[in-house]
Amino acid sequence: MNAPDVDSRPRSAQAEHWDLEEIVNGLRAVRDRWRESQHRRREWGGREFPSRDALRQVMTDLSGALFPMRLGPADLRQESEDFYIGHTLDRALYALLLQIRLELHYLARHGGGDDATAEQAARLIVRDFAASLPHIRSVLDTDVEAAFRGDPAARTVDEVVLCYPGLLAVIHHRIANRLYQLGVPLVARIIAEIAHSETGIDIHPGATIGNSFFIDHGTGVVIGETCVIGERVRLYQAVTLGAKRFPVGEDGGLQKGLARHPIVEDDVVIYAGATVLGRITIGRGSSIGGNVWLTRSVPAGSQVTQANSQHEILGG
Image 1 (cartoon, one colour):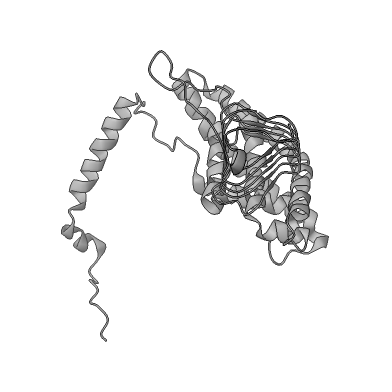
Image 2 (image 1 turned 45 degrees about the vertical axis):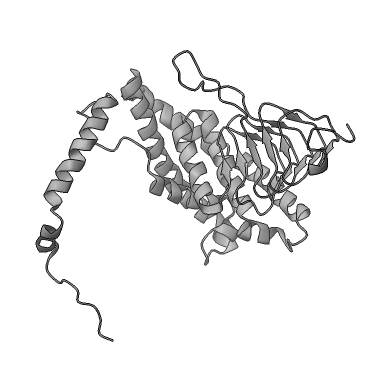
């Protein structure tokens, strides 16, 4: 069978088939209308926002620096670990600084701030973030151990680091959460969404999550911005820790910043497909069964199943 004909003419000659000039002009007109509606200043000519591609590389480097012999380069040897970590962190932190600058300079331009203050703030944020990396690694070690202990299929802790999507999502969350705390929510959100796209696990960077956290399987897990999760909590796939309602303000828009997601206390297990909504509390040591729909608090030690999903709480 003969190969299909391929137009070998230069791109400029092929362009006549789809009138590129008209399309480019049309797209410019749409952009101009949108920028005018958003009150964007036309004199700014450079990139305004952090880059997903740049932050994806930052996360690759930070993950390698945190777990060098497992997530670092294939040819790394232990005797050169420190050199690799130093070199990789230097590159990653400088790249992160560039992305944080973009977020803070954007806020300064549109919020009445000045570039000098934004520049100083960006450097302080990266300095504080870098200093927190040993602590982040220590917390991640508890997450790895929790996954190993919580999954009978896990043969080694190394398998958890190398293979488990839940651990990949938690690595991203621990880093994104720290950046969120330091005042760069857009950079943090992009990092969270990189993990979401790779794992199917959606953790808002604002969520507070304690040590020894384990997400088994993970696909479809959703954890909202104001969720507070204690220590030694285990979630299974398709669990939602979400909001029950979205109050509307006087201007007709949704009110932001309200505490609207669940509090999950220590040693809770939530099984596959469970949906927990609103600012309710799941008491310590409780077990929430698969496919349960829960919209009110339960006391410590509760066992909630579909059979008592009308909120008849056992063991409370």
